[in-house]
Length: 239
Image (tube, rainbow, N blue to C red):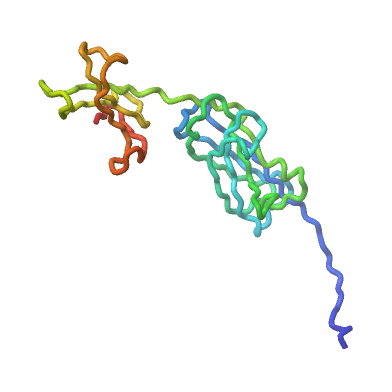
């Protein structure tokens, strides 16, 4: 008899409060240098009366730099991703303090944004189910003040010496030796640059002098026109 293959029984279901993850504090420096490291911190708190379930104990936080206090993950500048593992009970929190790099090319004032429980293609509302749209929408916070990002102080490249032969012939080869060093007391020079060699009749360079050679700093010696990496010259270092 196929009709007696089932049995019904009453089950009591109790609704529990869902968690509510919020970034409650963001600390950032007042100033930073583009392309260099900076220290920051933030705290994520479950402000709800419901705990994060143990099956939802892993998610990631994203850190951004933004010109304004409105986070746009498509246009604001991504800084770093931080993975979190572990549940949060009602009222519990975790804090993160770390160093990251300011993306190169950024200058001026920026807010530091932290977004917790970042969604992705398979979890469009994040990895932690927070119950309703309002709780899912309050997962980010900006720093109270902006970080003023500035360019690093310039280095100081100087040609220390040039050694040339006493005589030469037109269209002939000549061996020229020169030394360049970074005279800045504290700043590295990290960049691509070129050294140009000219002939001058008066010892003062101008646009009318004759270019006789060019040395590309950072160029791959095995492949002309291809650069391997920026040259880095420490204070006092020479080549």
